[in-house]
Structure formats: structure tokens, C-alpha cells
Amino acid sequence: MLNHIVIMGRLTRDPELRRTGSGIAVTSFTVAVDRDFAPKDGSERETDFIDCVAWRSTGEFVSKYFTKGSMAVVSGRLQIRGWTDKDGNKRRTAEVVADNVYFGESKRSEQRSGGYDAPMSAPAPSYGGYNAPAAPGYGSYPAPSAPASDFAMLEDDDAQLPF
Image (cartoon, rainbow, N blue to C red; front, side, top):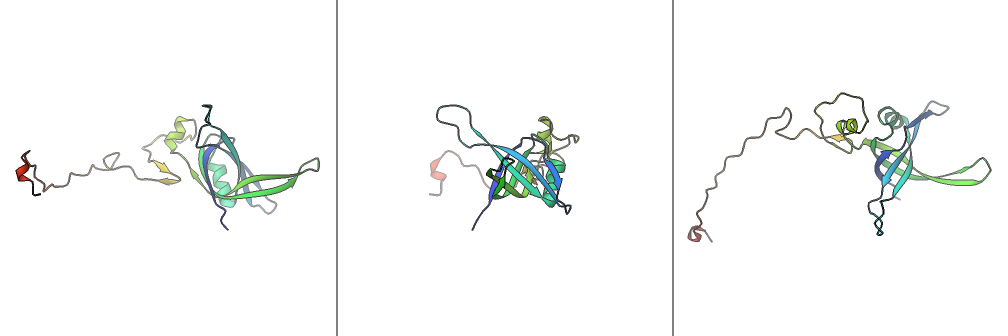
């Protein structure tokens, strides 16, 4: 069976790090994910608020580097969990158990939106947690030289065409 989910959105609150009785880290957080389509009546897109939980080092990572408003890409599995509320009613809740959590935007983008406190530097674009190198010709990389061309310009005379 296959149970894999990938979502991308902004954290609605700061992640909450807790520890189990045996000291295992578990972090819970909620991600606001906009739907891909707008309703036909012209109203705004709807947003889903998806509860997530990350265990061990992934949970510690989320707790340390993400805050309310941070863009995150969460990859994991969907889990339906049953529980009993304080009135004795049986309840069910769906949550994403995160295997991996990636930065959804670069540090520079988050600085402009009030995220990280790190100083601005020459940023590299971020693609789901992978920081790509700067494009040639920008930053400290030299621009590539134009390749030598062995093509000759033809006159507008159709008689010179080889076909």
C-alpha cells in the first residue's frame, strides 16, 4: 500500500517541541495550504489547515529553524488517530507524520517577510530544501565566454541555399 503526502504552506504558529517520557523529541505544528483552484463564483481561494507531527531529529530541526509564517514543504504519511475527549466522546483526527521537512523559500525571502534574523548575504535560490548554486555570470562566478561559431551568414539570395 502507498501512503505518501507532500504539502507546502506556511506555519500558522510556532512549532511546539515536547519530549516523551523516554526523552524522544516530538514537534507539532500546523501548515496553512492554499487550494490550487478558486471557486467558480469568483470568491477567494480556500485554505486548508493541516496538522503535522515530526519525531526525533526532524522534530528538533523544525522546532529550531521554523517559526510562525515560515514556508515549509512537508513530506510524510497521512495518519488517522483516534482519541477520547474530556466528555468521553470518541474523536478522530487526521495529521501528517512528517518524514522530511524542507525550507519552502530562501533566507532572503523570509527576511523580507519577517522570518530569519540572519544577516542578508548573496542568496542562492532554494528548491524544496536544496540550495542551488548561483547562476553563471552572477555573484562570484565569471560569465561564460561565447562559444566560437563556425556558421556563416547567408545573403537573402535563395540560390545559395543547399536545398
